[in-house]
Image 1 (cartoon, protein in one colour):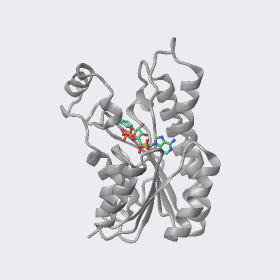
Image 2: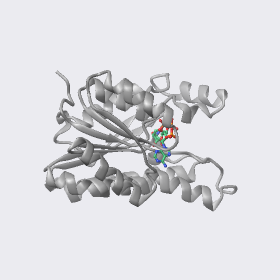
Image 3: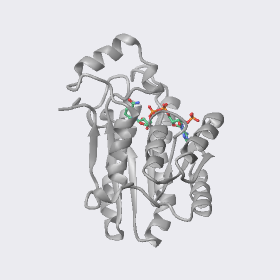
Length: 248
Ligand code: NAP
């Protein structure tokens, strides 16, 4: 049985990394996939074809998640192209790491805009149609860093912790409309974002994780399938830590 058959999903930031992994697993589970990217047009075209090979409808949109009007346009276009948005995954995110002593105002604002304001933008853009269709599942990509904090990532941690408060508030506001909203807090997932780190840091991460490995995009995609599907129909307002036991 496919868990997401006939559902339409909108995933932000899926040209690579975790978003791409989610898009692929969703297509395998029968979901039609609308996804966005910022600049990777070629990768997005290639992903469209890969997703279609699973027999689902797929389309990539260049859309800056940090821009309020762009999010409104994106939701409108997705509804025109797909007919409904049953699942929203707010996955787009960036890092601009620096110690607080050195961080610029621009790098603080940029990370908060792309990581946190984007979640407001897209959620705001989809809730009307979700209310009309009497249901939906929204999944926001936070981070263990949002739960615990991390030296050198004040901007990123603030944005990811903000997502958790936003998620719980949406769950409280929209539960009566059968709209669920949950967050995932990935630990150390091996993607381009983490490939920027030096090998010594990466090995330290790996050995400190109880399951003794970095996570894969599949680990996160599987959690998303659960939270997007009817398997989690009584779960809302939660943060699922997918971190190999990192914060235990
Ligand atoms: P990644 O490999 O750097 O990919 C980021 C994705 O977001 C790309 O598709 C990128 O598009 C897109 N994007 C960036 N800025 C955007 C914008 N303004 N509008 C729309 N799309 C935008 O990152 P990742 O490692 O897969 O991380 C995905 C999410 O998981 C992020 O929210 C991240 O904070 C979170 N996370 C990651 C880890 C980890 O260990 N990797 C851990 C915890 C949480 P382009 O390709 O066009 O630039």
